[in-house]
Length: 397
Image 1 (tube, one colour):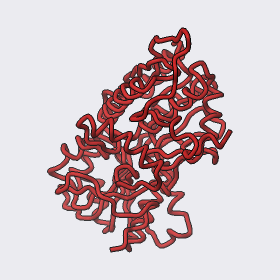
Image 2: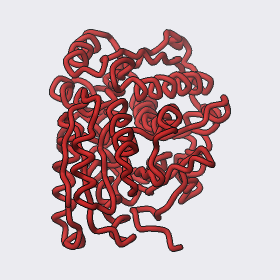
Image 3: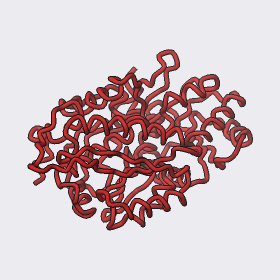
Image 4: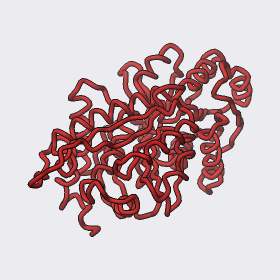
């Protein structure tokens, strides 16, 4: 069974866009649209993330339908707005469970809503959270997109260490995203290879704070060589304002959740000189194999091909949705949540736009530090450029 996932044998089966579907309609094919449910933050401070998720899923829907749908049926991805509110996300999952749709859920898009709905989907739906900030257990029915927060922080610290930066400051929110980053930072700094890294300032903020001047002042006084600020969306603007106002001139590392062109445009007048992100292969132009080149080209066909300049958030939900649709195409639309989960758990050598997936380790994400590339925002090029190798080691000058 495992051999079916090797792209040398099944490249056609995994092609969701840009390639003709081999699915032929049955003698009395059901052409009723198959409704796939998704939850995203279309309002609230996470709205810019939800909008990117919505746009990508709409483009994917069109491409899947042009190429045979699923078992001959067209799909419709119905998106619900959780308002960046975990309680609303819980209510929406209850609504999805009452529907007669396939046993999958795409989203939510942020850590707190994902954590809130995880207990509800267990045994009932396979949830693919569009956030790296959850860490599902091996027997979970939840999967987490992108590289884990732990490995993202590992890549940053490896990059700083390789550049001779050993005095690090951090600024984290007090929400679930910040708590996850805090926990993972502690684990990373405890690794033997990071024994020379010193955490010289450790500050916190609330997402509702309009100013972080006091925190930035303490950070500046500690004389760090780099700052990691793990905020998302609107609070990140407050952090960058504070850094600019205080004249803090050091490299600043942000969560890749902020890697959107609208955000870079909105914050353009007060961005640090060196703004770093944990990027992904498709953004850096890294294609390690022919299969990955095909996957990335398919993604670009429905983004750049429609006049969209893809960024990290545009691509974040792509691989999870492709994996879900691949499972339904193989198992059928009536597959149970357990069947879908077990199917994904056996996938390996799956070349996506964010890396080459291998779910056999039980991580329920399939990616690791090897799939991270540290990238710098280049205002002149209006784009991100790679400054590290895969894994975070700095590029040789």
